[in-house]
Length: 161
Image (tube, rainbow, N blue to C red; front, top):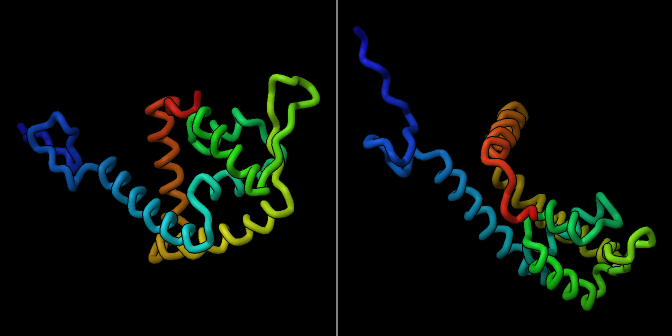
């Protein structure tokens, strides 16, 4: 009878577990390096990761509600509220009660925010090209599919509530 094959990437509770072969550790490492690179690059233009996420989101979906921005940027609601207040003081966004429901706050990108989005996209593009160097379109399509499966398997993020 043939011996069962050992998995190449065993789970943490498997005696054969090796951290450097753990896909989720590699994913976390890659994400941490990306965040560090983006943070350094964005700092040179007076921006940060939350600015990047909010501005690029609002460029695509303007206006958006505060709760939708929180969910889509994966930033806790209490945190995104403070970030949006700061961005409003900087003139990048404008907040306004929804015409349909005064309990809902809608956020609009301003002209200054549109100018800033051009800057953050240039920075983001440079880091993105550096990150994906050597990957084909097929590689990136597979990566996106795999990441969506992992996210779906894990269910809702605690940041989405």
